[in-house]
Length: 105
Image (cartoon, rainbow, N blue to C red):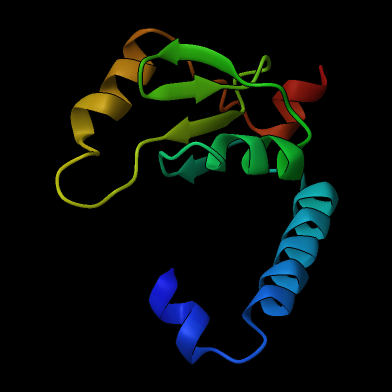
């Protein structure tokens, strides 16, 4: 992120605009599943604010929303994220990915 701060003019306003647009898209489309990536001390709070959820800690590195349609997983890089993490979420029924029509009933 430090590199971007030094090389992208008006970075903070660009991020703010993109966050606003993303929030609008999420509200308009109501996706069955949203996956957020990243560890760090502030990311879970920023994601929670954007998604309007309170995280439940599913494991040391995984957080889920109460309706299980929002998921916060470890960052993808350097082997931190793996198929095993996704499979663990499925095995423990941490995901509720039913199509929108099925959720309405």
